[in-house]
Amino acid sequence: MSENSATPVVEDRHEDGQIRASDLRPLLAAMTAARDGDFTKVPESGHGMVAELTAVHNQIMDRSVHFTVEVQRVRRELVRHGRLDERLSASPGQGLWTSRVNDVNQLLDALVAPAANATRVLDAVAGGDLTQRVDLHDGTRQLRGDLRRLGRAVNKMVDQLSLFTGEVTRVAREVGTEGRLGGRAKVQGLSGSWRDVTEAVNTMASRLTAQVRDIAAVTTAVARGDLTRTVTGGGDR
Image (cartoon, rainbow, N blue to C red; front, side, top):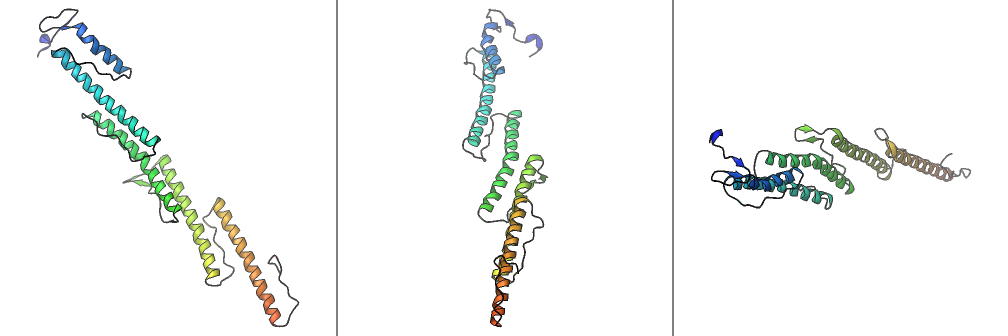
């Protein structure tokens, strides 16, 4: 159809091949409402071009409402129920309708995956498994910014706990299983409270070792008939 043959819009007249302005006012009102965030559909009425315009407008409203409802549903599942696996369902239509849903879902994946990964590692730590670490890669891409800092913080915590546990276990094994006194847990690589606790363990082990050796020295002296030696309460001779 050429520009010259387009259906004209006339005021308050309804003749064959013409559209009254009053027929378009409900559609204009609905479009104005949609602009302001109200996605109410127009009741289907009329015929010809008006009916077609109304049908297309209502399809646009349906797709807009679908997206809005899906965003609200996923937000509710995340905020109220803590479900991190919820995603927007596919949108009717194609093009930017589909892209918009995919973009939101990809954003959720990028935010949720590192948090879920960190939760997995923390659950493992709570269960006594210190072998798990947060993967600092998202596929072939490295995590960046706050997400990377989150992963590194969790991994550092696990590393510190693993080092502390390994060193204390080693010293306990040397004393309890091998009977070797004087062992010390290494504090290199530890910081903060981890280092303080390790040093406290070393201090305790050192004093216990001194006391045991003191007792052994006194016992040996007694066995030789020397009753002048006594055990010092603090472990110092």
